[in-house]
Length: 479
Ligand code: ADP
Ligand code: MG
Ligand code: ZN
Image 1: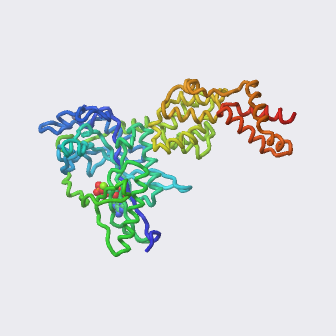
Image 2: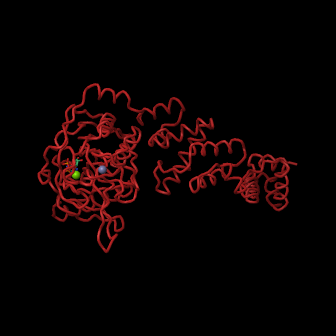
Image 3: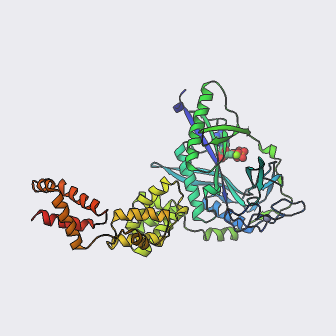
């Protein structure tokens, strides 16, 4: 059998860290990046005798996420203990939700190519994050940092509805964008705020029974997710083709070797001995409470996209790219407002800014410069102070060391030469240095003009005003 004979089936479990100020069961800060074990208390360190108190914001954020993904919100819900031992989990259980999650039966619509498809959301539940083990830090051993223990998470479980790497990519990006828009998570993947467990199985095309799945845990980059799935499909196809079978297991993706490795046999729910958390009361939500959150939900990417088509007349494609990220889209709106030229801002975002983000593997949230900086750049070009090719260099600078574009061009001596006399001098010099091009032009070879302008640009390191150059060259050549 070949790879084409199989259908790939995937389902994702996404963990998103909620951006509440404090942890889920205590009042410790959730701020990322603090010195190890400085944001801990007896509750999140699991001292005996301490009691958890549920942070109301966590419920609110999870309900927001549920409403934004078309879920039914449970009026009655509860917390459960999921028991397992690991050194980053001092309680030896995680408080999660088992059979009564806050949100169920939703979906997210994705668009792959021209095709629209609904991906089912099985459930969204709340739970606490574990601590972090730092390996080989001390005497060859590992040290535990409990700052992350008790940071609130939502887990968003999808139905096994995903059929290709593109669909997975699209689903994850859409989900991330929704969570960013409704401001429940900053979704910083490098900080682990948005990470996915990827379940993959294959079956022969036409089969109705699902194949055995493997699960790759804690993936936090789009690129590695795509690579890992591709590798895993190949591995499963080969195993089945060789008459073997797939073991249900947890895998670890290794970025360097580009392979998956077995971590442990998959645990079943029964191994976790779930039971209702006795230290917390059940969660009861009133209809008004849910209604109120629904009515105050911020604008979602899809409606913003439609607004851009009508309000700014952006192309479908550009509107899609810009609104795919709340940060890009805020940058677009704010910079357009300041400089009054949304066409130019649109172009910068979809061409150069997107290219640089891609090259640097950066997320829009990490863009270091402000909307004001970008607006200034547009204004400087519109006023003719700099050319657009110098503008590109200014943008690179803004990514390197963000500051006022006006300061950048002064510092670098990039101000455009728009003084007619100065440009005329350059034009005469270039004409003088290139007699053959002058002859060519007079013989009707228009390309010669382009060459001469190019030489003048080189001479001025891109600083000459191109319209003026063209005009003066034509005047001189036609004399
Ligand atoms: P857990 O991994 O915690 O035991 P579930 O049984 O709820 O949880 O399933 C987890 C995920 O695996 C879900 O997103 C589901 O869509 C996906 N999944 C389940 N069965 C398969 C399968 N045969 N192939 C691919 N994905 C699957
Ligand atoms: Mg799982
Ligand atoms: Zn604490």
